[in-house]
Picture 1 (cartoon, rainbow, N blue to C red):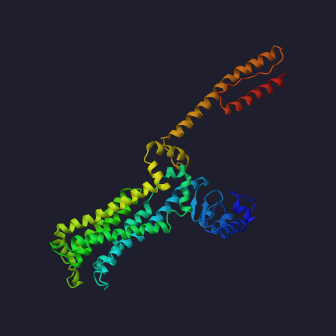
Picture 2: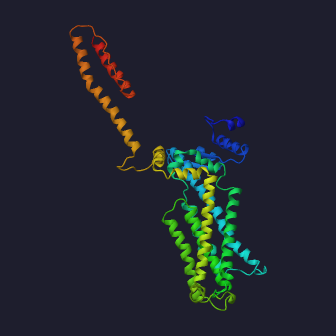
Length: 432
């Protein structure tokens, strides 16, 4: 039975006990490898099944809240499952994937510059970055940008995901996070680290007319370039849903780093790590050097141009389904068709107010026409009844009254009229 149930598109089990429901889910989990099972129920007898599945969904209804309290997710009606899976489930998968690879990417970009510096430091382990700055990299300067990406990202509109449910297969086929995608992100990280380090070392570190070529100015330039590149890629290039929160994340990351530089230059003790010469250097040292700022700008722009060029070539030569529909969403006509096709699902549970969509207006107009047709026939009913009664009183044999319906009348009218006329005939025959 289990083998047959696995190959079938759908299976209906009647009068199953709670243990049998849980056993069925457990059998599917064991026999079908690399699967994700989902169980949904609204009563206490569904609790075992909900707990056995990978994902359990409880419906709050007439049978109480037992199922909802033991489930992973709770919804009010069964029809909300479509939006929960196709929209919010897929968004959550994409956010988790981008958060994961984004975290690995930024760490590789930042610490690869450290690795490149070691060949010039004789592999002594000397850090390119000042210790306080190094300890605050993940805590203050790059944490919010990757967290905001993992919270607010929406690669496609909700209307598109409902209208094209095949896009849900991205998670089932592991297209959001796999070894190939991981290698692509790591390649970009190493390439951009090489650009940052050798731009800093070649254009500023070996320049003949630079004022301060000590360790701290070069490390501070690489640190600044990494923070700006990370914030720009994760909040501008990678994030599709660009809102005020993306702008806020970028400002907090970049602005926070420059504020930290100002505070560090003003309060740093000369006896702490004297080899870095941090005290006042941002005000009176490399901070006043035009070469330092131009080299920083060149390193940042070179990495961003490289990032955009790689993305452009990939989208042109090897576009994915997501990138194709992102392009289609830019067309107002296509976007409108997606919205109309998914309006019934997206508006489930909404408080519509007084404004109606085009689909609702068409349905209301059709309903008004049907009601008008029925009303016209009902208005003609007394005349038919009076003619029937008059013929009965005059002693003439009652004949059946045939009513012809036009082809344009709706199906609801055709069902309503025979019942009305039939009651008139029965009344007439009873009197005769």
